[in-house]
Amino acid sequence: MLLLMSGFALWMGALGAALVVCAQNADVAANSGPQTAAQPQMITLEEAIHRAEGNEPTYAAALAQSKVSSLDRLIARNGLLPGVVYHNQYLYTQGTGLHAQSTGSAIPQVFIANNAVHEYTSQASINETFGLAGLAGVRRADAESAMAAAELEVARRGLVSAVTSLFYGSLAADHKLAFAERAHQEAVDFTSLTGKREHGREVAHADVVKAQLEEQQRQRDFEDAKVAAEKARLELGVLLFPDPRTPYTLQAQDAPPLATREDVEQAAARNNPELKSALAAVSVSNAEVLAARAAYLPDLGLNVTYGIDAPEFEVNGPGGMRNLGYSASVTLDIPVWDWFSTQHRVKQSEIRRDSAKVALSSTQRQLIARLDEAYSEAAAARNQLDSLDLSATTAAESLRLAKLRYTGGEATVLEVVDAQHAYVAAENAREDGRVRYEAARAELQTLTGTM
Image (cartoon, rainbow, N blue to C red; front, side, top):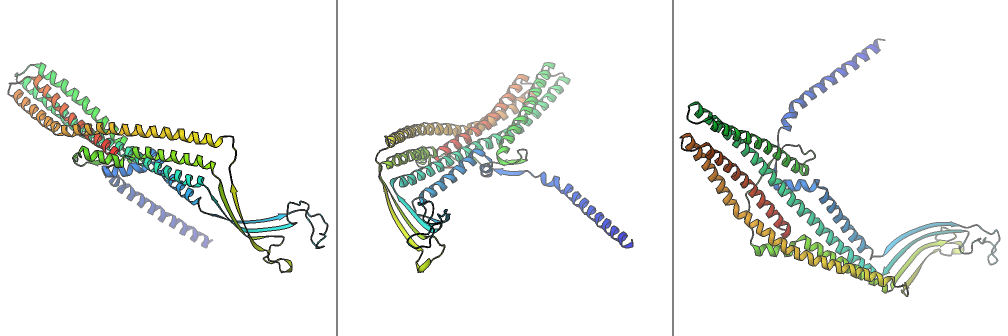
């Protein structure tokens, strides 16, 4: 009994110590958790693109298809090499119960197509088929692999363009939110200024009413900007994090200069993924035509077999006869008549090839048009950046002067309100202009393959 009580006391002591340790760990986690979660991650454009490549399903599907096509290419090439099979079989056939007349010992089998009552097969068989169809299959697999790689690049560049637009759109939304907050505070200060001047009997109450209306509008603009910034951050966060609500901050670089039109056209001719995909599609259709025409030609088959095919599973049979041996065969299959099926397949493949050529021509024309449009858009947006910055600076100075003139009694409240409207419009236009340029530059890089 004493031993039982002492064991129970030890067990209770161990349980109490474990509870104390768990409570200490919980306190440490509770104290350290908020500090870790409060640190937002700094995200650059390159980091955003890298994260999006691992989270976007369309790009993941294109990547998987490219890998599968590469394996299909290896499978098609390996199909040209000889195949080796190690075949093992035991075959039992019912015997007749009668002895063979020649030997007097063997029991002939019931089924004459089989070789013996007990038959053991253990052979290595090497097979190889020579034909134009195999070479056409390799060519088609190569073209499909190239097309899948081009489609993967199309998906990647489309993802880069989308991430770039979302990145700078979210950055512009944050800037607009900060500016909306400043504009609201500016309206609040102006309302206070009109109230003081009304109290000093310098202006009418109408000025206060006008200032209050402006303050209320700026308050609504601030709330709308807050919602827009949150939506932009969530849209980008869907591509970056498992939880789109994860806090992060964006770090952007200065807008780079725009390349010359000649460099852009040369890069598009070399690296455009849509053009490469269309060219690969034509190559696939050419390979299909070759594979269809291969049915007109004969196929040469070779087979070499080495091993055992005997009534005993032994290297040497009765009387010292050696069971190990080999055989070889050569087969030539010559097509003669298939009711014009091959001719129809060739016609089908030629029709698909003509369609692929039309698609290639259309892709080339669209590339030329899209390239000119994208370059013109990017050039116009780049040229307007300095003008937008100057307009924002001028609008800020105009607002400052209007408020000074109003304070001195030389301007009306409408002039100040108009200056405030012009300042807000100029700041928003500057952010929209930056987003426009980055989106146009991303579209141009997508066409030229320089991103």
